[in-house]
Length: 446
Image (cartoon, rainbow, N blue to C red; front, side, top):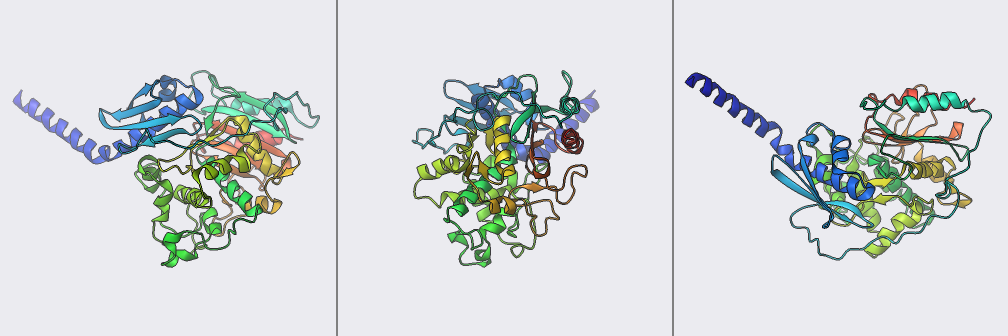
């Protein structure tokens, strides 16, 4: 009996040691992810804690977290086995922010001034549009393809939440999973990067910034990084050190779930390569761009307002909320929330070469720049947009460019087919067959 207890003791010790070496260092990130997800999903989209835990937080290790919501205080807390508790607060107009113990929740803050959506039919407003029937569309094939993108009741293979399809500026199809509607705000994750890029497009159109000049980063002026341009940053081609691997603790995860000022994380990284010689996907780069954008304005209020007035509210994305880090900088890499319909509006802006219902918001040249392959990216990346120029999706037109986010968020823009296709969900390629999905929708247009 003593031997059995001794063996059990050794086994327990081994389990504790294994947990200590493998999981404990991740606890801060696990509880951080969970608290932020709970606060955003609940306060922005009215989802229950149970629904968020079963869907958004149904991720290996993240599902270890225990979560609570304080309705009166408008915050969520999460911990793992009572360890590493993290807190995310909600502020109207700003969304949720993951905070640390030093964050002063009583400190006054600025809220973006928003413009109301115009009373026009969707997509140029928010009124439900009248049905438009095109003779050249095989609606049976279209609907079959869309239906096939969703799981049957209780399934978790495809995990699609929303699909919206626009053709020739008209809504031709949409569908939502159980519990989601046209009014549901859904996190776009890295699709937010494309929103960040568009803000620079407006500044460039206004003649207020030259993307080909060295980036205005004072901290770089005494070393080799002074030669990095905004163009290099937009193209993820700066040569700065960065690791983005969501399967482990890396620069990206530490930035999103630990950093107070996310823009400074990439800013402080050394150069590994000369600019425009080495493509490397980096969420840190986009948050640095957001910080650079912030520094273009004299006040915080001007920065907040521009983010929306430049593009988001201009095209009636009234549901969109882009959340901030603790320092007040928009998390331009990852934290944009909007309805699937509003995400499709953004795609339509680019499909129409920067023109929105007669107003040229972005120069046509900016849209072309956006969709032109970055040097060394093998045809898969432009300026904060992904491209199909390299044939990632072999059965989809090569001129497609798209916003893409974690777990399979997509706004696909296909100029040759005059289409915008939005898919929001919790599974990404190859678990979700994007090639087949896009092929079926595009193929429904004869």
